[in-house]
Figure 1 (cartoon, rainbow, N blue to C red):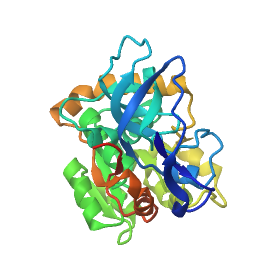
Figure 2: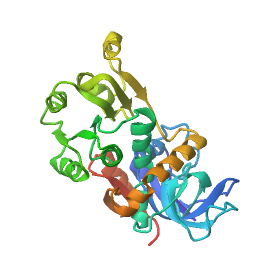
Figure 3: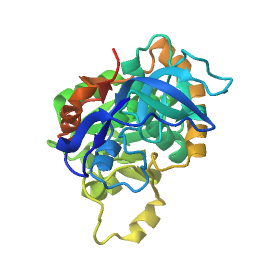
Figure 4: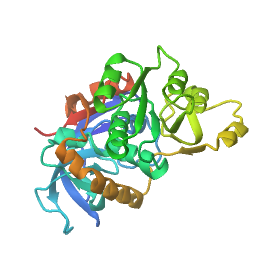
Length: 326
């Protein structure tokens, strides 16, 4: 079969679509004919050789396709349409997936749409509900609202919790999409101080939950924005990973719960349990169109370098998809 590998750790010019060994179907796995894969920042780090926990030389962690070998797992049959997270190998014609992490694709969604769901929606669900414990009608500040996780988080917060959603983005077209998805307050961080906007929108009380992709650059403003007893979840460091002169008493005075998390390096069991709960809670909402995957651009698998360039330049609103099979 063919798959995408990096000839050497480095830039997107190292990505090539070449013959690679067929995947080995181990106990617990199903074999999938890949129809679409999605691009994630994890893939870029993997391409650059910066991740120690990705062992598969074929890049990619998120797929949608058809089961071609159910490997004895009663929940699946040959021909089932499935989506989910894999342990590397998504940018290929075939890939194995732990059966307990596979989700059946709602009939109203095609493979491209399905490939846009697993990573971002599972990350958003984990962050909002397993970690931040977002409750009904609480307030939440979602940074990078136009990103894949951002667009998913806005929908989940509104659809499952009827939350008051404040979101930031750096372009008006991204904010327009956030509004379409249900965000209540839109802040262009290049033009306005989001901490001041949060203060205005919450009448000075701050938000109960912050979903933070940015890190160091937003530290002071996030602290100003969070409410007493607020939950602040860090899932990215796009704005730097080192904060100087942190006053721990500040965190204590507001009784802030600050949590850092990543999904990809979590255990198979953790991902399986998260997948099961997420699917139970949201499958019908996807069927009804109340939750929608957001796609920016679809590239042919051979155009993988262009897809990575788009993500690196932060041009996308929603997901970037690689179409593997017509």
